[in-house]
Every structure is written in C-alpha cells, then in structure tokens.
Amino acid sequence: MYLKIGCLNTVVVSSPEIAKDVLLKYDQVFSSRSVPGALMAKEHNKLSIAWLPAKNQWRKLRRICKEQMFSIPRLDASWDLRLEKLLKLGDYVNQCCINGRAVNIGEAAFITSLNLISATLFSVEFVEFNSDSSQELKDVVRGVMECAGSPNIADYFPLLKYFDPQGISRRTKFYFEKLFAIFDGIIDQRLQSRGTSMKNDLLQALLDLNQNPEPELSRDDIKHLLLDLFVAGVDTTTSTVEWAMAELLRNPNKILKARNEFRDVIGMNDLIQESYISRLPYLQAVVKETFRLHPAIPFLVPHKADDDAEINGYMVPKNAQILVNVWASGRDSNTWSSPESFMPERFLDRKTDFKGQDFELIPFGAGRRLCPGLPLAYRMVHLMLATLICNFEWLLEEGLKPEEVDMSEKFGLALQKAIPLKAVPIKL
Image (cartoon, rainbow, N blue to C red; front, side, top):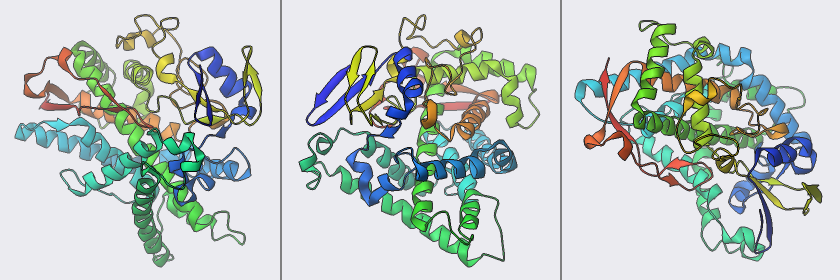
C-alpha cells in the first residue's frame, strides 16, 4: 500500500514475502529510520540506537549492547536479579489471594518488568507493589510510547515542526527530562562510590568503557542508550504479558494445558528457572500465538528508503517511510488457519519462531535492525507468564464470563490493551 500524507511518502508492507524483501534482501537500502518529530526531542534521534542510521555509531552501540547486556553469559550471570523480582511478583499475587483482591495484570506486569529492567541496568529496584511511585513512572514510560506512535501533523508538514501544533514534541521532551533526571542521579551516585563498591550491571560496564584512554561513549550517549533500553523493554514486555493473560482467561482450557505442562515437566515445588523454558513447548506456543495476534509494536519501528528501490514490480521512492504491518501479517488467512482464534496448538506442529528468520512472525523485526533486546524479552515474558499461571487459578472480576473480556486495543507505538485486565487469583 502506498500513501502520501502531506509531504511524507509511506509504503505499508503487509505480507511475509514482501517483508522478507524489505528487511533481508534489500536491507541495506531500507535499514535507516524514518524518525517521528517527537523523538527529535533532546536530539534523541542523533544518539539513540533505535533511531540512528545503520552506520558506525549504531554498530558500536549495538556491539556494546550485545557484549555487555544481551549475550548468554551476561544474561546467565544476572539471573539471580530476575529471580528475585519474579519471587516478589508471586508473593504479591499470593497476598492478593489471601485478601481476596483482584490483580490488575497490566500493573503487576509493569512493576515486575520495570524492576527486572532497572535491576539489569542499574542494580536498583525502582518501585514496590502498591506504591504510588509506580504510577508516575508508568505515565512517563507510556507517555513516551504514545508520543512516538501518535499521528503528528508536523511529521507530514515539516513547516509546522517549529510550532508543534499538537504539543507532542513538548510532551516528549518533558518525559525525557524526567527519565534523564533519574539516570543522572544514579550515574552521579555510582561515580561517587567508584572504588568502594562495584556492580555487575550494564551501567557499570558502560562507565568502565569510559575509563579507557579514548572513551567510547559520552555521558549523553549512555543516557540515551539507557532510555531506549528502559522504555522499550518495560512497555513491550508489559503489554505482551497482559495480552497473553487476557487470551488465556478467555480460553480456560488453554491456561489449564499450560499449567498441566508445567506440573508434568517441572513439578510444583521447584523454583522456576530460565533453563525450564526450552522444556515447556506449550508455554512457548502461547507466547508465539500472543505475538502473532498482539505484536508489541504492530508496525515495527519505521524504516526509511535510502535510495529508490523496486520491490515486486513497484518503485519505492527515496526517503519513503516503510511500515511493516506485522499485525496484519499475523491475521492473514493465506498464512494462518482461523487467524482470529487464539490457538497455541498451531505452533506445536510447525517450527516457526519469532527470532527474525520466519517472516510470518517477526514481532522483533528482522535483518540488521532485529531488536537487540530479544534474548532478554524472551526470558522475561515466559517467566512472568509461568509465575502467573502455574500456581494460581484466576477468576475474572465482577463475574465476567470468559467471552466477555474486552479485547479493545489502544493506539500508540506499542499495542496496549485499552481496558485493563483485572482478575482475582486463587492459590492452587
């Protein structure tokens, strides 16, 4: 689909075959980013791993992320931090059982995701359950994602960027400054304690790199990288867990299958471990089916054509914005049988995965712009879901029937559930 809105040429790709051409075959032409005006606030587009063109600085940031945060040894070394947060999630749900109180699934997933990410980045837990501070941080993180995904008239008519008629750039700058103030405080504290205590986290690794005779990153580089990892990691993981739970509560037989698999393979008395994921094919299928129906970033992060290119007989003009509609691909009846139905079983007999090789399921993108945080997201989503479904039954709030769960979507860069999912847990 070709759209011209104001001065912006946009090409929307909605099939796995053409997505493969764009993201793999011609990825050199389409590896740049079409940057929303909102994300030019605080010059984020010039420093962000998500929005930089695929050149030297981007490659350096990507390498640092892979080596210092997302490699298997690094993730294995920080497992104890994640286990602690998962145990706190289980304790919180258990307390709600005792009190007969409903759990806001999205809120619980957000707090857990926030603390998992903040522990990995800073060895700090940002919020506690039932804390007012979680709402403020949630508003900031969600605010960034909403500003990035909201239609902005200034993107289509560049002369309006200075005036910012919808106030989107002003709001984004406000949210960035809030997060940067937090990061500055943590960085200052860490620098002051250097030599007396050392942490095994990403911030420590980044600051150590800056002790080299020729520092690889400036302080601004570090803050913008932390912002990318923090915002993207928290919001996308939260929305995926909430959508998965919503689908499971609408389909009680599916949640029972996942729970029984866990009991049969692992047992009920053992602490959950990341090594268990590979032994739980039905849980993996639930996550894949959630990504198919509810991809965290439904159009991926926008790509940009660096030159004219011919795709499938059509000319894509230079500087066009390319949107890969993974939401539509996931519901294409040419690829999927009963595409609107939640059927994890479909993945038990097919080897399709979401790691960038199977283009009918690419919630994390593919090619050189594949999301670097995929290895951590993989662990977090599976383990949070296992924590929620394996030790608890769930009753929908206010006597709702499973088929009455509202599945409306809320627009933004990330695909969020419009009506929060609330359910009362019962200890098994």
